[in-house]
Length: 387
Ligand SMILES: Nc1ncnc2c1ncn2[C@@H]1O[C@H](COP(=O)(O)OP(=O)(O)OP(=O)(O)O)[C@@H](O)[C@H]1O
Ligand SMILES: [Mg+2]
Image 1 (cartoon, rainbow, N blue to C red):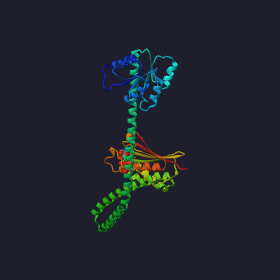
Image 2: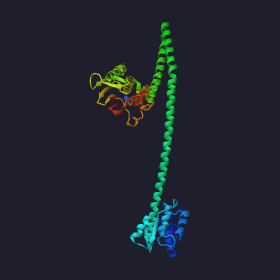
Image 3: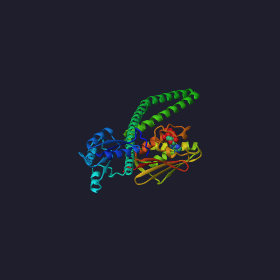
Image 4: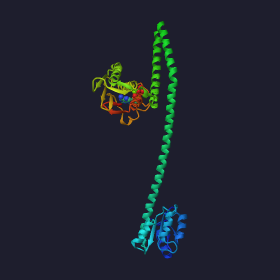
């Protein structure tokens, strides 16, 4: 409560038809470091309020012309002055008048004869409230704007992502044929070399074919993802035996496991067939991708366990290893296309494996969930059993 008034000090409009009162109140306000504007009747109050836009209005009730209540009502009807808090100065202490006052929009009352200390305290309190309210309103506006900006940015990003996806699908599609041609040309060359007995060049060509195969593999994975996205892949659904699919996958990877001294084992909850309506090729690929990862990240000479479990409405395939696992914070990212963790540097791969597993799980109305295998990773693909 300093006594120095600054130009940005709050402005209080005092409305009273009694000059003596006006003077007293203005003096008190200025002593509080506030700026005061005055009006001698209701009409003048309305005009001044609109021009000055005060932070608070001290309004006398009994005045010639428009009385305080009528003035207040008019202030509240005008959008420019509607939000300015009004404190009535009244000698009428009957409850009825107070109720009337609140009804027309008053914030508070001070009773005449005025206790200047009380006026000062009430004015300061309401100014503080008003300032708080304003800050909050400004913050809300800012927050709303920020939300709008973010939504716009997100939309733009989604659009770009969609476009990138479209382009990468188109590239994969267009390059598949020339790649296949390149591969068969290399094979014809290899046949010729075999006849000539040129083993050195033959070996080099074999590496080149393996390179081409890797590129074809990546394009195939991308195209399969695109097909799943587009819903084209639904046509591949037939009733198939999951026990056979999982066993075949495990058998297929057995040589790779042996090469790394890893024991790759299969655990079936139930012996015998486990029939379900699935896309068998995609299921095989997804399970293969999980085993491929497990073998890649498991410890040298470690263990990888594949298990198949079922309930009445779902089938669970879990591949567990004893490698470094995936940190919780990274688990949602590893299923993005081309995402590879820091620890996978130095291992082969492009980061499409889990994107495909996730897509296949989703296609089968299922999920892909990662858990700790203490140590290592347990990746579980759950699919819904179609009726
Ligand atoms: N079993 C696992 N243990 C530890 N980290 C894993 C495991 N499986 C996946 N990851 C992490 O998730 C990343 C993404 O896996 P994803 O299978 O999609 O790609 P990739 O194996 O690197 O390449 P690709 O499968 O295309 O050959 C990996 O690079 C690795 O960081
Ligand atoms: Mg992989």
